[in-house]
Length: 369
Length: 269
Ligand SMILES: Cc1ncc(C[n+]2csc(CCOP(=O)(O)OP(=O)(O)O)c2C)c(N)n1
Ligand code: SF4
Picture (cartoon, chains in turn orange, brown):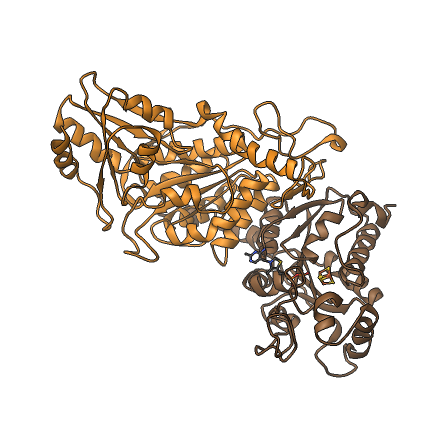
């Protein structure tokens, strides 16, 4: 049954992480994510975990990767500028295939921008913030309940696919308070440990699904983890064939498993000519706008932002429907919708630190209906 | 009894270091110390950043973590917190560990996390072609200080000691017996232990500063190093700090033990 609590999104994220089994947090405070650090600092003491306040976000990211290799489920939370600092080591986690969760409670930019005001402008940073070809998973919560649920999901997907998962929240869901049901137990995906004898273990030899089992330091397995190009043994290799295979596998293990990690919510009446494509807190305004506009309008909510739900978007917009994409940036997801489909895409965009209201969306809907 | 050879990844040989480079000497010493301590290959995690010395993990058969340039210490910090039973060693060059990673060096020493940091200081960035680092002495030539280094160097041991490290020591690749003893003590030390090993990069630093060839580099260390208590100079070698203070995890556990009531406050539960 669990219990109902009236809490903030940021608190729900911290609780979700603990419920998923996180026992290590390393971070550097930044508004609007700091409550996650504050709650982790208290709760880690209670649950036998460790909270570490690092000297910066670069160190925080390195520390959670290290702790994960040593067998401790780990996470960090930050916002725009801190997320930028984490990018190099996020790339390391992708390359070294180390599970961990990074929460980015998005705020205004560029740079310090309207420091504490909301935005949804790190969508592209989450995907392309690092050098090199790579895939990650990014999820976006629309409510406080989802802050909890998707954080649990983020940990599970991260362990399952040996990839860092980004929870792309925003200041509004991070700071809003709502009733949340916290279950007594959540589904936890355990790390897939090697079963071979220690001398046969290859930390980068994939199973059939493209994902290699991961041991932890200190177990009977001795292994090397590296961000440099490596072969299945984990030792450096400069062989071009090996490099091509590795980078391709990093891509394929996400794309070939899309069915397990792509989540959307669809409400499209048969008579709909226009479909709102929305995510995060903006999806709530989109819901309200849809109610006001009537049955000519459908709604596609993107829970998974990366890998981008191409097929689901294509399906929702089939038959010449127009896409209206409200987002608190100048069109980052709108551009993805255009890439994925031939639909006409109309953006409702705001980058002034203010939320997008249902009326603003309604105005645009009236213009295209 | 384990042999030093067992800690060497001999299938990775030949290594990529230039002939006459000091890195091999430090690697040898490290393998001998691990053998003397009888540590299992799965009980040791070597973390490295990027640089010539940062390749050392490629040549070791223990568990290892090869991360990004300058970040070996925070990664090691996470590993130690994830499993406090591990012996964690961070191997870094002076660029890696003390210049780009200088902030982590200071804070790891202050935090007093139970790690051993070994900075092999060859006074320049070997891997990228011999540019100046935070330890290149003022006035010395590198590929980016063709007229001499306009910046001043810092003394790593003094920086780390000032930041609160309970164990700080320095040796050179000429003083191998001393180096081995200090590395062994550092690993056994509970808390943040720092060993600086002055080393030669004959390919870049030596050549540009007219200390030509590995032999000349060795003579330079022999002639310029001063044993602790036997005089002054920039290259004082020996054990500089050795104190007993509770390390981070010890303090954390002590605080955890008496905060149970406090944590119930204003969390709404
Ligand atoms: C973020 C980043 N900046 C720069 C580099 C390029 N780089 C690689 S190794 C290195 C310096 C290595 O010097 P040092 O740490 O002193 O080690 P050495 O090669 O002398 O052993 C640099 C600047 C990098 N890999 N990553
Ligand atoms: S460049 Fe210098 S530090 Fe690097 S391997 Fe050669 S001699 Fe050693």
